[in-house]
Length: 236
Image (tube, rainbow, N blue to C red):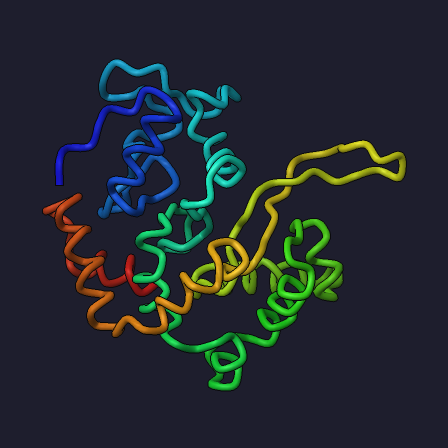
């Protein structure tokens, strides 16, 4: 594939991501690949106004997490790689889902003992609510204060196994109808985010074929990637 362009703003980021197909979400490729290749406390390795945590939606990669979800329907963002955040385009999502989920529904995975009871509570709340912000999801899934760690583990588990994904951000709303506090991530199912057809396609792709295709793209993006890292990246 052709060399990726320098990243000097949001449009460059989107173009590079669509070309690559997937990327780690932070400024560290973790031995695989990241479109934004420099850390939060570093300047770009080339002439670029892009800086982390400036609050500028055009040049701050931290703002791009929710911006891609608000403005586009062909890029997913969630904690999907090494238990960390990452992006996957709609083109490549079925291949990752084919490896992580195969042709299993959530009910199948739960019946086979592949997901936890806590994850089931969260999944059912998300499936019933459509799009549920994290600050409401804890309550709707019936997690009390002392279960906070179990809630976070199950939320990560569902993202890594690709049964839920992030579909935007939302602040809390006061009784007066005013937004307040920090923005929370909003969760939905991949079927809701990309459509049933995308996940149906995943169910038709043989796992080994999907694994091989992703591995091939990783080695195009990073010829020096180690096989152990590749395996963990793909399988979760």
